[in-house]
Amino acid sequence: MNNHRPLHPMMLAGTGSDVGKSVLAAAFCRIFLQDGYRPAPFKAQNMALNSFATPDGLEIGRAQAVQAEAAGLPPESDMNPLLLKPQSDHTSQVVLNGRPIGNRDAYDFWRRHARGGTQQSVDFRAEVCAAYDRLASRHNPIVMEGAGSIAEINLRDTDLVNLPMARHAGADVILVGDIDRGGVFASVYGSMALQTPADRQLIKGIIINKFRGDLRLFDEGRRMMESICGVPVLGVVPYFKHIYVEEEDSVDLAAKSMQARQGRVNVAVVLLRHLSNFTDFNVLERDPRVHLFYTNNTDDLKKSDIIILPGSKSTISDLYELRRNGVAQAIVRAHRDGAAVLGICGGYQMMGIEVTDPLHLEGDIERLPGLALLPITTTMTATKTTRQTRFRLFGQGSGQRLLEGYEIHMGETRPFAQDIPQPLTMTDDGQTGGCRVSPKCMGTYIHGILDNPEFIDMLLSPFADKMDAVGKDFDYREFKNQQYNLLADHVRRHVDMDRLYQILTDHD
Image (tube, one colour):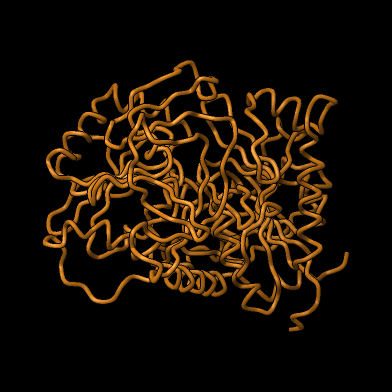
């Protein structure tokens, strides 16, 4: 195989949401990298609360940051030029080319703005196509990801991310169907049958995902699907539990642990309605000293050694709900009884004396009391801070290695009244940030702070008597790299890569 020949772009489109497009995209990014190419991921439009800051301080969906990592690349905004971050059932913050441009009503966005722009609006189609073109000029192949189902024919005119994007890119479309949810024949055939004749020609293959059981049982099904659909089934990928890849969003939080456990340091993450960046806790979930669980139950909070208030896409709304349902009071009581409390981003804002919103950016509430665990006050602002950061823990001395994280937040936090709180962190350029009242009470704007073993050790240190003796520190970065390789091996075993390469190099 000549690894220097150019490949067509490849789009993983779906019969529906959550069929595994994002994970498969990460797998193919790693496979192409292993095979000597320079792949890059691309998703024209993403809707997610879980976002990531690029090295140049722009914001993209976390899934594309994961795919970039699998491809061996730093993430950039051209990989996900349009990001919608839901704020309610009807409105989303629109992030274009890495920067927020305001909030949009869903109907207004889909029926006017996404059609191609007006004199009063942005031409989103032109923007996402330009981002793709920039990316494709530097990488090959582009591993594109669609969104949801390609058969939403009522949205065909306004679709920015599926077949219209594939047409612009000249991509070979691989349709992904989820056999685990049932009805895979109907969903795959129906998705193809509902396409226009021209779009149907773009679909060059099928991957059946999340198969459970003996693969030989689907041999006849594979032949039947190829017969009725007229394109090859390139692979049947078994469901796996032994490989870890970060989830795109918090849809699977319900499956995570929800209760305290004996014999470990119990860490409770408060389950907010608008919880964002839940990937902050992936390392703690795998630390053998810790049992991490998610809860909004006041009795469970009493059993916690450490309570973490996570990021939120709607700080005031979530703070209001915590005060209404008694969770805020339960956190304060648990801290008084010896539990540690850590706030990250929106959770950091909630731990202060108050949060104010004089411009009504989040709703009608102008001022709301916080948990008063930190001597700070926060004012919501229209400007969003988005940046990667390198820092040390404040007071640890210049000999400590630089830690890494990123910030994505709106709002300005400052000391309350005449208080001068101790900072938690100091960046490599000397700026202090966060707040640390004691080893059991602190807050920060830095997402990913828990990816650093030094910070975890500091957080767990007050509970040394509860920790079992364990071996070496957990290296999360190396762990993730190993998982991408395992994922690539898994997909490579079950997908006909020779046939796929043939598709990606054929000339019609």
